[in-house]
Length: 519
Image 1: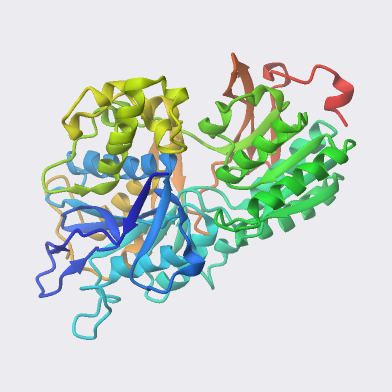
Image 2 (image 1 turned 135 degrees about the horizontal axis):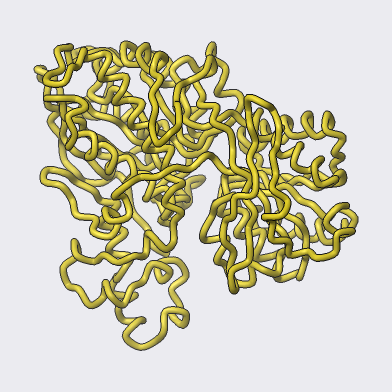
């Protein structure tokens, strides 16, 4: 198992452009770049905190399970920041960043957020970090439970936060989360879309499996209300622990699988779970030779690791709604070279390249094929090409491009550009110079974010009254391609029309018997 121990020993980063004696310590964070204005990024580059229930030390935590999708999301922000810096969009102003790993845990997300806004690891009265922090806005977190916790803290001083994936409906409450924004719609739209999809195909008897976190609970209740309105009945409701460290997780998943198997009349199952839990569930489903129609929540509707897992075609039809995707020109080439810019630090990139060819991987690959290496997690990143290169910075290939849906990162592009457009207005930028004061309190940037309205890639983007984007969803069918699945857009959910639009003829049905499909 690959692991990283936090905090990182990165030293002290001197914030540029503040004109004060304050220093910014990023000891809990893994990537930094200097700039006149800093953007914070919260991502779960690791998906587990090891033995957290036994921890007695408040300073450090041990994170495991390197998460490829979250890692690439951080790279999408970095790439967009560099794109903006290399343009004349903010003339004379350079954006920097501080990226912290939440390890998919709300408490650690809060710890990392505090660290971003802190000076020398504390919040002293001498230099009030909450009024004039170095970080002016934060992009993240990935999961709603993290964002709910973080937003409570950030809202105390109106520090803007933009999530690209947190969809819990509660985050639309501007009284409780006044500084929270997101580049995706609220779950109230997704659950309505899910219910309409089921009604469209006459799937009126369905099961639901959800997580026990805030996101899972809220999404479940929202779906049940929408399902009732669409005359879709629930055959069963099962809940599994959201925390991957929960000692009851595997046992509970096995119980859920047995329940699904025994309820043969419910041929359609909605999974409101994060990717790692779906993977555990599917492994048991395949082992038990269960064939159903599976409906994905946005958390896993475009998961390449799931789409390529062994025997995925045994599972039956899979549908899900995904966020609107878009192009990020040049990003694939960036991922193939992954070279650090001068003055930047990125321990996540270093860890990823170590995974491409750690000593254990190198020894294993020398003797065996990748599939024969008995290394449970790290081996999936292994590369013969990387092992032939002794220079760590040069350990690149097409692994990221082949294993991550790149267009999924469009939300990171939109979030970063949203901040840039707000800064352009706040700093009074023209074509040659930005005249405004750069050491501003974050609440001034928040006010400008509420006003943005820009066009990009033939789409118009702005935050509605609940500070969410309302660009709708794509309906994705997991079509068969050899032994794996590919994502095929076969429809959409139009939020403005409140309607599902489906191209029936484009669907690749695995279940050929219509009487089974339409339960």
